[in-house]
Amino acid sequence: MIDTIEIFPWNANFETGIAEIDIQHKRLVELLNLLVSHLTQQSEAPLLNEIFDQLKNYAVVHFATEEAVWHEAFAGDAWETGHQAGHAGFVEEVLRLKAEEGEKSIEDVIEDIVGFLTHWLALHIIDSDRRMAKAVLAMRDGASIEAAKKIADEQMSGATRAMVETVMVMYDKLANRTLQLTREINGRRRAERELPDDRRVAGARSQERAKARGGKSELRRAVRRVTPGRGDPTESGTENIPLAVARRLRVSSFGAVRVKRCGKSAPRGW
Image 1 (cartoon, rainbow, N blue to C red):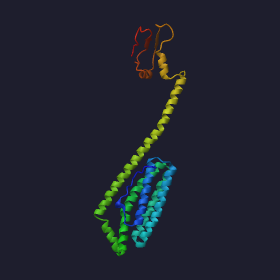
Image 2: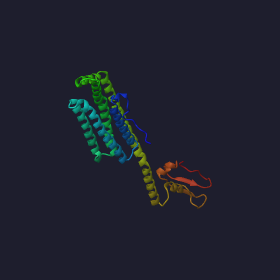
Image 3: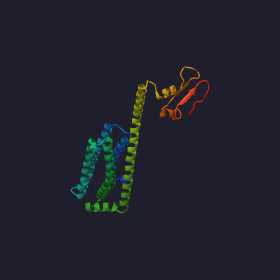
Image 4: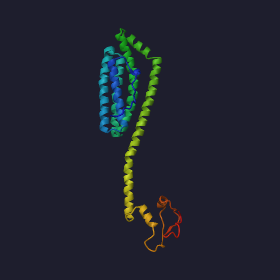
């Protein structure tokens, strides 16, 4: 089971007081958080697309439900048409961002969509939807449409307005940090996946160089260079050692290394 990352933590500030709408809002937020979680875990593109489609399709269903509630209370009113325009703009922007998949990687496209969704949903729910819901609830209590709209505007002003702005700043920062963390995690995982390949390439190149020099590794050739032949026990074996090998063997790179058997002389240059 995948660990869920909450780019959009749900809390009571987002509740409208209309149960059906609140349930659907929570489901939208769950799908958004699920999409971010799979993005962070670098799930395959088909799975990312599947979750995105679920989120997009559920948003359309939710908008239809929400608009039916608003239509019952605000049929023909500017609040209804304005809200419908907001929903239409949401769908258009999501589709526009998704269409960039041919120019960007699926991960980058989903990141752009997640950034847009987080800000749009938070602002739309906490401001527009809650305002509409307050008016609907006032009308259900007997207020006229104009009186209900005035009540809603008053309840959404002052301290509530300040709370909305504070929450939006917090959620925008949270979304930005979460997406930054996602990019860092994905970058690290890509590097980890590429590292074994680099090592294999380096190993293959080392073997090719060894074959070109006679089939022995550089270290074995170095050992041979400082090992006397099978001649006289007092015979000297003197050879130059390449700088890189000398460093690995802790041998000075200046001049030759002289080795004699029978302990007649100690190696020079150590």
